[in-house]
Image 1 (cartoon, protein in one colour):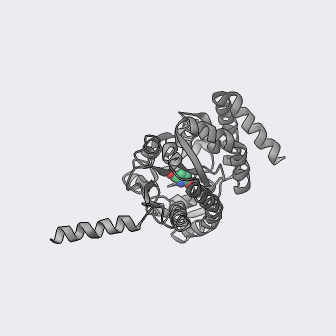
Image 2: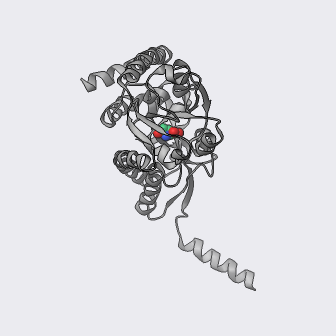
Image 3: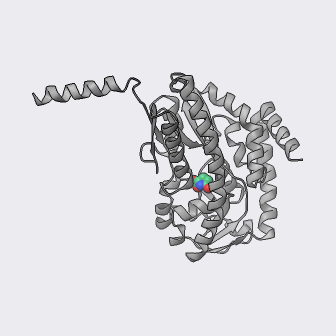
Length: 324
Ligand code: PCA
C-alpha cells in the first residue's frame, strides 16, 4: 500500500513537471574556494534560474568528480556533459590550446583578453572537431615564480625540482636548468611538503589557495602569461538542448566570462597580500632574471610558431595588429 502511494506520488510529480529537468554534471579541477569554481557555480545558478530549472547543472569542484587531467576527455566522450579545463595542458594535441602560455606574448589582463579574442574562432573550430563547444574562458592571474630560497637569476635555478602544470611550464623548466615534475594544483601542497617539488610558476591565487607558505618562502612577480580555464560542453549534449535553453546558456556564459575576469583581477591583489601576510617574501623578480626569461620566451615563441604552422601564425599576427 505504502509503495503504491509512493508510486502515485511520483507519477503525479512527473506529470506535473511537463518538461523533465535536464541534469548535467560539471567537473572543475580547482579548490571550492577558488574564484574559477565560485564563478562556475554562479554560472550554473544563472542557467538554472534562466531556464526555470529546465537545465540543472551541478558543479563538482576540487577535482572531486574528475581530476584536471581527465576532465577534457570526460566531456568529449560524454561521461559528463560540461566541465572546465586548463586547455594549455592539452597543447600536445593541438598547439592552439597552448597559445595562452607562451612567455611574454600576452602578460596583462588586457593583453590576455585581446589574445583570446584573436584566438577564439580558431579555438572554437579546433574544439568542434573534438566534439566540444566552447562556452566561456577566464584567465588566471599573471604567473610568477615560487621558490624556497632567494633566486636572482637563471643560474640560481639549476637543478631545482619544479612543479609544472602544462608542457610550456615543463619546457620552461628545461630551459632554465630545472627538473620538471607535472602535478595537479589539487596536489601541490603535499608535493611541496614532501619535497617532490620545491618550486613552481603559477598565480598568487593558486599559491594562496594551496597555502604554499607552509613550505615555500619567495614569490617573484614575473607576469609571464595568463593561462585560461575554458568551460566546454559535449557537442551532442549541446545539440540536444532546445534553442531557448541554448540562448540562456550563452547569455550566462557571456556573463560568466565577464564576472570571471573581474574576479581574477580582484583575487590577484587579495592573494598577493595574503602570501605576504603569511610570511612570504613577495616582490618583482630582478631585472637580470626577467631579461633572461625574455630570451627564453623568444625561444618558446619560435618553437610554438613552428609547431602551430600557418593558422597559429595568423592568430599571433592578428593579436599583434590588435595591440598596436
Ligand atoms: N593556477 C593553475 C594554473 C595556472 C594558475 O595560476 C595551476 O597552478 O595549476
